[in-house]
Amino acid sequence: MERYILAHDLGTSGNKATLFSEGGRLIRSEVFAYDTHYFNDTWVEQNADDWWKAVCETSRSLMHKTGVSPSDIAAISFSGQMMGCLCVDRAGNPLRPSIIWADQRAQRQVAQLEEHISQQDFYHIVGHRNTASYGIQKLMWIRDNEPEIYEKTYKTLNAKDYIVFRLTGQFYTEPSDANSMACFDLSTFQWSERILEYADINPDKLPEIKPSTYVAGGVTKEAAKLTGLAEGTPVVMGGGDGVVANIGCGSIAPGKTYCCMGTSAWITTTAEKPIYDEQMRTVTWAHVIPGMYAPNGTMQYAGGAYNWLKNTICRMETHEAAQSSSSPYEAMNRLIEESPAGSNGLIFLPYLLGERAPRWNPDAKGAWIGIKPETSRGDILRSVLEGVTMNLSICLDILRTQIKIDEITVVGGGAKGAVWRKIMADVYNARIQVPSLLEEGSSMGAAVIAGVGAGIFKDFTAIDRFIEITDIKNPDPEAVRAYEPVKAAFNDCYFALEDTFHKLARHI
Image (cartoon, rainbow, N blue to C red; front, side, top):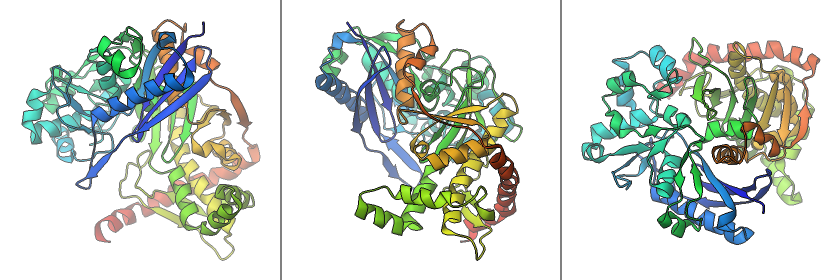
């Protein structure tokens, strides 16, 4: 009898439940959307009960539509949105909506921490800068602004930790999500006593840290009734979505690297020790593989910039594609192929939403530099793909100072276009490989974590059962050489405009 693994990917827009066979075959996915509440300019919250409803609905729907018996599901695990703050009481009841990763309200709490610890020291403890994006700063905000909630808080959880509690009754987290709280010591894999002291947060309000492969418990009788799962089914902790995707993309050994090219984008590798950058341009996550690390550089707007290009500059292509039932990107890519490497001297800075890595500048703006009378439409389009790729290549080069990277698996919507894959191969000077499933990295990673934790798989090399590589692009030495001065000019253009960006943000 074939056994199955259930993976839940608790994202920002909804939960995707995916059923895999233990042989690595994708059986079916179900998506359940939930609301995100934006208000007060920088406040962003979600209701934890919506997460639970999504898990219940998708679990039941998957089994109903596939005919898979609950007793044939061998294990369950998770990939979940990170850097959140959900306060629950001793019974596990949410005391308020979860403050999620996108929320930026805790600026005063960032300043409070800076009074006690420098950015450099903070970065070298947790692998991240002290910013309002992380969980501990959000919990400090609750303490300062909602003291009655803080006093009642028994534990602070991230999304998948809350679902683990609802399924098993146990309060746990694991290293990747603990790291996203920004009070986790990368050297000990435990909560940082130093940062918690500076933050003035009671450590008892944080859950016990278990390995990502830890079986938190079996599905309880009550949870079985609500989800349709079999009572006692092993529930494996899983991890934060960005790190779980390392597993799903095959980044399971030092130097194994992947790039996710979605609306935002990032490059992440696997390493045996943190990669610290003197300028703090990249970050390091705790890996879901015990004792390993996931150094990373994330940019704000990657595929988003290409989509913006389609909706503004390329309205004609969009209109014509609608008439012919084709994709506007096909027409755009044909124009891009007419432009040479370097876009005939046109540089695009892709900072339409400010920038995280490697700039860490919320005031940064998008810009074209080098427009000439002979600049073609293809040059304009190609420069956008090159600008996004060059920004990520800066992060890649930082990682390469401490680890060899010559092959990168690319996933996400940006991996669909052959022309962009070719640009990536040449700008990164790396072999680019693309799997058949471009949107399933987190789900496959969660499935493998479940299999390892439940004893179905011996180790993480089981991901080889799930990944099928369908395309490979090797770098062209001539194009690699052509891009070297362009990459230098790209960097120069940013720094030449850095002061101007700050002035624009403050005066216009």
